[in-house]
Length: 88
Image 1 (cartoon, helix red, strand yellow):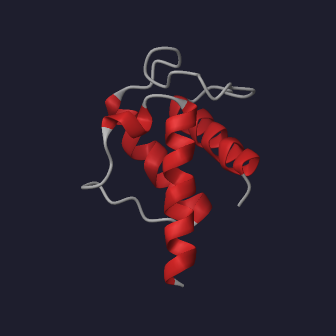
Image 2 (tube, rainbow, N blue to C red):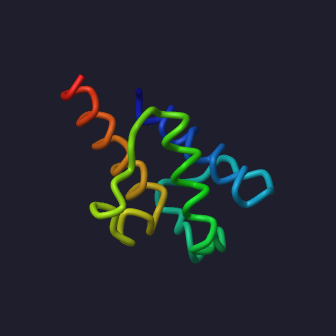
């Protein structure tokens, strides 16, 4: 999956969990500060991204820093996709 596709998956997931349109986000966009993502919505975000990409998010490996910005979360998803491809 290309980087742009990952960003689009994240935007779509954010639109679903925030129940409002979210698009055209920069990689620097702060998920909690700028989008007002609440901790309760994080679970929905993770589940939606897991479903869309086929990755499995390990809560023990997930850190709040992975969810700071679009870039940090896209980096996390990208790494999880690479790991999943390596194990298949």
